[in-house]
Length: 485
Length: 150
Image (cartoon, rainbow over all chains, first blue to last red; front, side):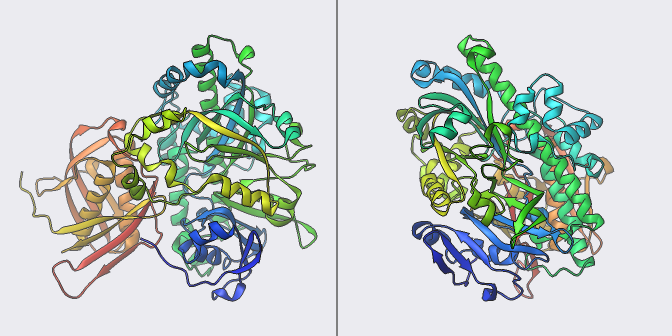
């Protein structure tokens, strides 16, 4: 199924295309897509371009409706969509965040080197699969009552640290310190709490993963040094989100926002763009619930890191200090946040929606963790399970152009069914193992759906982000072990 | 077990990262039943059979207040996902009633499922490009299409 767009894109320069304001009735601002001659062919004429235009119709949008180089068709907003809204005139939309609130990625470094542990990788892979709760609906050993669920959603990463599963240094190395203080646990339903009560510290399924990786190449030695990264070093990456807790929050508020859109006479070109004025009761309630979901996700990823640290200690027979398992950074990919940016040369507080996009604040910004203020905020870009992933940093250019945002991943090119067909009859696990990647999955179907060819070439995506100046490459990471739900 | 003859057909449809379904049914209840079968196929579990033996009981009931609209269906499908994915109930038989004011799915279950039995997770059935239509002619007069985020 593919809805087609008739919108004609205007090329601005090598890495930028404009969706002109007159391309569709109701657009209030231009759209802008970051891409390349090669990548743009994959989206020209598809629904994601329409979605960039659709977002531009929403009231109070500031600047442009933006799409990052990994843009693809989403619900309401495109995946890779970024849009900021004026606090008084603008709206907040669950469709601009997505179901998996604060789905994101974190990266932890170690003092191990890949060449020293290659013979242990198959065992490490087996232990990780058996010890990390993952897969459809799989709960973990942390089961919380509704009261404690609300505590997690209020405190985020700090809840994890209070229970001895993370350090204050970990928290300093997380976007927003792993907690949005605007969370309103009372805006979260009992059903959401029920869905999340046994899901803290669980990976989930679909595109969520845990990878052990090797630092393959360093592009920016100064930034790499700030992050404690060097060639050959072993690191691990976790990709997960707010699990059922976040899905339920989004689902409930989409329904409420549908009613609110009618109430406030907001014309919608797509039901999934349902929204409410930021200052309305409905808008405030969603913002509070969404922040609670975001906090849950930060806690979830941090507990996963805690579990993996313990597994490393067990598998390699070393203590935490000797292993040096320090969190490099944790970023969100799906979130709406109140941030101050320069708009038309003036500082303005806006509500920035990032859906399948990463905050990429540049050097010198006092909102960046002190450890990285000199080089820019780390940006983590997972690729596919064969090619690898990237560590980038935010830039001043991103602050000027994209409300401090950049891409979030490779972006899919094949549907799940097409990926399954493409890999049918092939020994995907064996072929990855020949490349030195040990893959373990709860379900073989997931493995086929998430096959490397299902994704765009992550290098192409990252090259656009760097070419456009909205991020800068720091390091390339090669997978060694991949765990899928 | 007294079963009702299946009067729907469905096909799963592709979406970039997700999946959807198109369902045709003789009656409006049939597109709901076909939607449940489409979801069961995605999960890789047997679809529930439609039975007249299912007794309506509040503890085994999904009731969504709403008219004969796509919104009502989507809300019911999301409740269905919660029942199976979170409460781990493997529904074997269902009975459906869709009036002008509500959609009711009564269900019977023989087993619980262990979570890994499901092939894939559904985050939610979305409103994106969802539709429920009635044609004036033909055997399959009702049609629905929806997309799920997975």
